[in-house]
Structures are given as C-alpha cells and as structure tokens.
Image: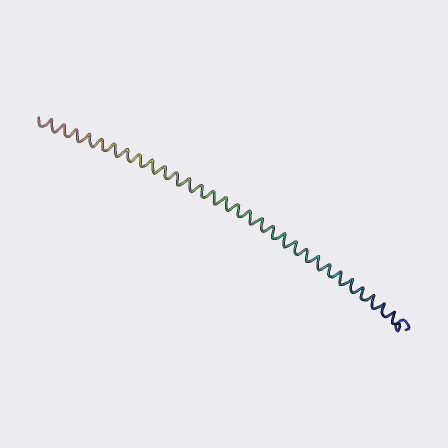
Length: 117
C-alpha cells in the first residue's frame, strides 16, 4: 500500500501509462498514414491506367477516322473519275452521232440532187 500512496510511484505509473498511450497513438497514426498512402497510390495507379486506356481509345478512334476520311476521299476521286470518263464517252457518242447525222443529210442532199437531174 505504501507503493500506491507514494506520489512518486503514482506519477511514474501515470508517466508509463502516458508513454504507452503515446506509443499506441503513434502506431495508430502511422497505420492510418500507411493506409492513406496506399489509397493515394491506388488512386494514382487507377487514374494512370484509365488515362492510358483513354489514350489508346483516342488513338484507335483517330486512326479509324483517318482511315474513313481516306476511304471516303478515294471513293469520291473514283466517282469523279468515273463521271469524267462517262462524260468523255457521251461527248464522243454525241460527236459520232452528229457526224452520222451530217453524213446522212449530205447523202440525202446528194440523192435529192441526183434525183432532180
């Protein structure tokens, strides 16, 4: 009982208890900091992964869009070339028909003159 009544003993016991409390709180704080750091690292890793996936998606979509533009441009050029070819053929046909019509008129005129004579 002397130990319990001794103020020095009580102060030392309280000091030991406070040191234990401080150590426990320090451990808890360190554990909380570790968990926080892990959460931050996980969030950064997740964001980096998502960013990489989005960049790959953007690249794929850009490539697809470029391919689509190139394909459409090629189709337009082919259609334009086909139209020009058809126009040349039609002009040639018109010229041929004019020549044939002119030749037919000349033949008709000759026959008319021959018949009159």
